Image 1 (cartoon, rainbow, N blue to C red):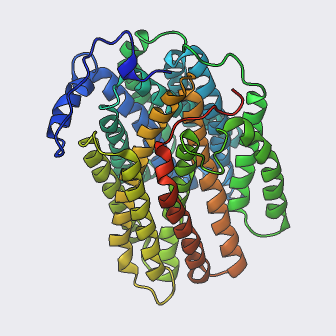
Image 2: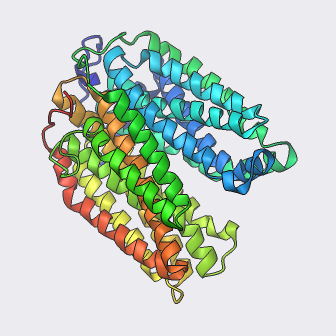
Image 3: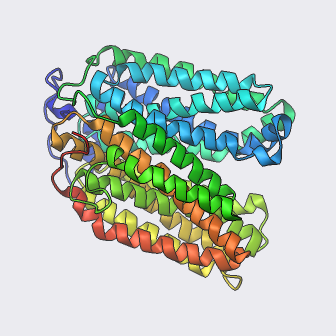
Length: 481
């Protein structure tokens, strides 16, 4: 698939080079983002991401009340497992649909599917209905995330993409700050049903705003491979494996979790041969290295994000509200760094990625001074700001490099490669959170288990720093092409 700068339907002249301070870059890309022909598309993309973010942040807060109303504590994990498994299927099949048919259908169908899931959840009276709703939401959310990347590749020039990805990062900030408290108030004062129903207007507005851009897109994707054998079976097997890993991570005690994890890996390994670019495990230069770095960066950061509140409450006696403060400052660091890189489109993205990995490594390593019982809990604040800055630089750079390296291959596979990157996100987090749960179950003490987990995650971040340069290389032929 050609980049937007090579789109024959585009009459935009190539923008001039900007000075190192990025001022000309800001002036050059702003009309492309918010000019009369792009404003609705840009705002629509931000709303599409925001609706997923609000759902992610709000539902976690409301879920204890949901499960208490519809099921029991033993059922707590299943709504999350259903969403995760369905999002894997939505990610893979949405990427395939975008490559073969173009993103036009996905950008309308997937948000509507997500919205239907919200309506079903908002009217749920049984746990079974809630699980159906979570499956619909997962399918829609997975496909939306991939389709947005394909839309960006088609509509925006390379110089504008860093700014677009900065806006996408900012779309998570408000939900991260206000989503949990608002969901808590709505659940307590009204009903948890309204946590789901309240997001539906975001879906409607986002679809309406994206429709003008969708109408102008081609119906198909020139050069996309006609077939990829076994893609549906591989997607379903991967979904089952991710669901199993998620369940095992939330139930780490006993032999059952170990057996489930082993079976999950037996399903997952052959599936990944179909779903990831060749050479991903070895971080082969080009798109494979981009996908591998995405898994390393997301796995390291979000696993710590999941366990940091436990570290502060269980080991150091912080309240839940205080334990959430490092997560907030980390999100602010992320959005600030993403906005900064968006104003400097001429900087080398592999270099920014290396700097981002280094910041994440430093931020996680600093928690080795927090995790033990003798640690200093207040250090979590400055170190997690550093880690957030690293994610703002690294994640945005990976998004840019994903489209650039996928376009290098000339095979019309932006959807496949975007789905692969998102899949490594999901797999790395499911696996590493499960490892943390196993360590906690084995040691019985967060003060003992979490330093070991943090040390291992530092190694992953340092590994990413070492292989970041490979993302600048030429693309390869993807698996199954």
